[in-house]
Image 1 (cartoon, rainbow, N blue to C red):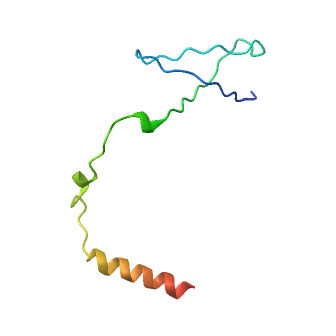
Image 2: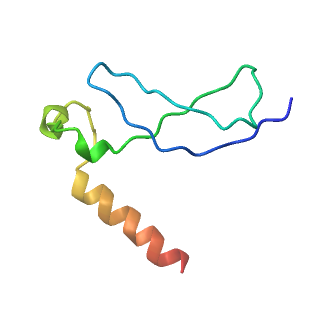
Image 3: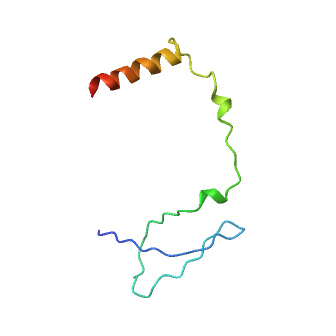
Length: 76
Protein backbone atom coordinates (compact mmCIF):
# COMPACT_ATOMS: atom_id res chain seq x y z
CA UNK A 1 0.00 0.00 0.00
CA UNK A 2 1.41 3.36 -1.01
CA UNK A 3 0.23 6.30 1.06
CA UNK A 4 -0.03 9.80 -0.37
CA UNK A 5 -0.78 13.07 1.37
CA UNK A 6 -3.07 15.91 0.43
CA UNK A 7 -3.47 19.22 2.24
CA UNK A 8 -6.90 20.82 2.47
CA UNK A 9 -8.21 23.78 4.43
CA UNK A 10 -11.20 22.99 6.61
CA UNK A 11 -13.32 24.58 9.30
CA UNK A 12 -14.05 22.89 12.60
CA UNK A 13 -17.71 23.45 13.41
CA UNK A 14 -19.22 24.24 16.81
CA UNK A 15 -20.31 20.59 16.95
CA UNK A 16 -16.64 19.53 16.56
CA UNK A 17 -17.05 18.22 13.01
CA UNK A 18 -14.95 18.67 9.90
CA UNK A 19 -16.53 18.32 6.47
CA UNK A 20 -14.17 17.75 3.55
CA UNK A 21 -14.73 17.45 -0.17
CA UNK A 22 -11.92 15.45 -1.74
CA UNK A 23 -10.85 15.89 -5.36
CA UNK A 24 -12.41 13.53 -7.92
CA UNK A 25 -8.99 11.96 -8.55
CA UNK A 26 -9.05 10.25 -5.14
CA UNK A 27 -10.70 6.85 -5.36
CA UNK A 28 -12.93 5.35 -2.70
CA UNK A 29 -10.78 3.54 -0.11
CA UNK A 30 -9.70 3.73 3.52
CA UNK A 31 -7.69 6.73 4.65
CA UNK A 32 -5.80 7.95 7.70
CA UNK A 33 -6.64 11.48 8.76
CA UNK A 34 -4.36 13.79 10.73
CA UNK A 35 -5.92 17.00 12.01
CA UNK A 36 -3.57 19.90 12.67
CA UNK A 37 -5.13 22.93 14.30
CA UNK A 38 -4.02 26.27 15.67
CA UNK A 39 -3.54 25.61 19.37
CA UNK A 40 -3.15 29.34 20.06
CA UNK A 41 -6.88 29.73 19.58
CA UNK A 42 -7.52 27.58 22.66
CA UNK A 43 -7.75 29.78 25.76
CA UNK A 44 -6.29 27.27 28.18
CA UNK A 45 -3.65 28.34 30.66
CA UNK A 46 -1.45 25.65 32.20
CA UNK A 47 -0.43 26.23 35.81
CA UNK A 48 3.15 24.92 35.84
CA UNK A 49 3.54 25.81 39.52
CA UNK A 50 1.32 22.86 40.41
CA UNK A 51 4.35 20.66 39.60
CA UNK A 52 6.71 22.66 41.83
CA UNK A 53 8.27 20.50 44.54
CA UNK A 54 6.83 17.25 43.19
CA UNK A 55 10.18 15.60 42.43
CA UNK A 56 12.37 14.50 45.33
CA UNK A 57 15.85 15.78 44.37
CA UNK A 58 18.75 14.80 46.61
CA UNK A 59 21.13 17.50 45.37
CA UNK A 60 20.99 21.29 45.44
CA UNK A 61 19.56 22.33 42.06
CA UNK A 62 21.93 25.27 41.57
CA UNK A 63 25.02 23.19 42.45
CA UNK A 64 23.92 20.51 39.99
CA UNK A 65 23.36 23.06 37.23
CA UNK A 66 26.79 24.64 37.79
CA UNK A 67 28.48 21.21 37.73
CA UNK A 68 26.79 20.32 34.44
CA UNK A 69 27.82 23.63 32.91
CA UNK A 70 31.41 23.00 34.02
CA UNK A 71 31.30 19.67 32.14
CA UNK A 72 30.16 21.54 29.01
CA UNK A 73 33.03 24.01 29.35
CA UNK A 74 35.55 21.17 29.80
CA UNK A 75 34.27 19.39 26.69
CA UNK A 76 35.03 22.31 24.38
